[in-house]
Length: 535
Image: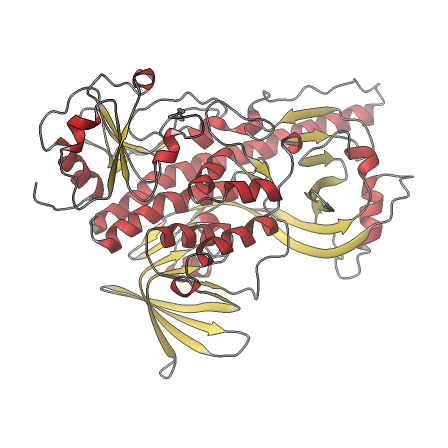
């Protein structure tokens, strides 16, 4: 590549799925230039991920995208799963996706059932709306090699459409290139977990199924002949099934028709077929020098429960403000070490929950099969082996606790004893303003949440702004936000206390009452960001 074009950019993003596109939008908000490369020639035409959970919608609310994503998705009543023998039979079990089927008091937003191919164009346009020249995207461009240097990374790219070669010099590389990540493999980073859990096929088709589904909507219908999911509010379906042995000669319209059940007489028009592997693993490391893994490149989880993409979006949210701080000079490079410290334990917990989801789903279906085989009269309902809150995972989604050098314990020291969540089951969430936790949602005004006070800055929430605003915060971006007396107890604050909230909405420090000294805020910001700034 001696004669290859040479491009210099602060951050190279590898992978144009939801995680890479969200990272691009977040970094653009921070004024960080990026180049995103995607080896596919276009955005994925397949539905793939089906659920944007409540925490991801909070992230998109901060980017100003929540309204567009909700408008393109399904109505809240589709936030439900249904179990049937065939699609045209009655439900023998059903469960709500809490936080999706209706609003929850713990958040200002509601999750959305939508297809990934509807989500990605919205994310692509998010950074383009500002200045696409500052955040270019190259489709049909594959990373083929990368080399770390002292002050950056050199990546070799090939454009498969024109055959041109490019050499990119980046300060950092964010690898969001999927479960079969080229970057992870080239770095020799291993994985832990079950690994490949089976080969599956997604068949996208059109058919008129309203007579069985319109009055009982759901985001997913589990049947004994595969999983059916509506794709778009205006129509379209997907059938998810273990991959048949002879895919080359498979009669896909016939297979879908038979899976719908005998005697349906429904015309099936198949438009796309995709074969894929269900993976279950967590990378041994999320960082290799200046190269950082996110999304499926860092952790791939089974699809049951809709946790995988959403965990990847939280990766990007956690990482991008740290990259921006280092690149913009108000954070030390050591801040990036907290990314793995905070997200790696969450990835393991997410994998455990997704595997448990799959096992529980299979238990429901197997129990039904046993009833049918035994010839016993089937009951009206099959008791679900989970609570109604199971599919919400609110404890895992909203209750994540970060422990790292970017969190100061209530006593004032860094909290670096590992990470995790506040619940063994992942189903229950108890809001708290403890350091390391997501800032509780409280309404500051009729339409403005405490979470809306967070953005491309640190936020200081306090009932006594005058006392705190005098305390220097330079060079860190900081906004001081008044907190009404009605919310101080919920945040564990006295009349002169304060919460220091990171740009990702997690609490960095808490002073229950008046600060211990004039430099308390300065010292906390310096400790959290790993900066060396004179007080």
